[in-house]
Length: 89
Image (cartoon, rainbow, N blue to C red):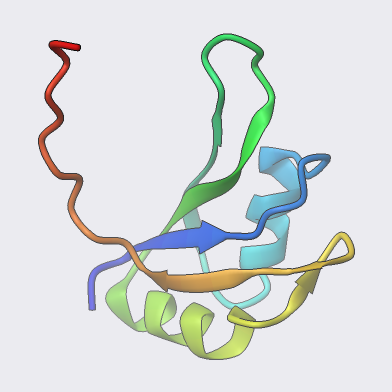
């Protein structure tokens, strides 16, 4: 398992600091990023957390997937590599 995780179902009011603190309960967090809409700057409700080791990432999936964060159940899974996008629309 890689150390980068996908986190879905993040409440819109959640900050990156809150996301980092939530995952820090199970291991060392390298980064915590919430994806935001370019036009509005508002959260899209998902993000990525990078843990310091694959073992900590596995533990985060096992312990935090399906848990509640700020009133919403989050989904935690191993992040998949980003697919190339066609930017010629």
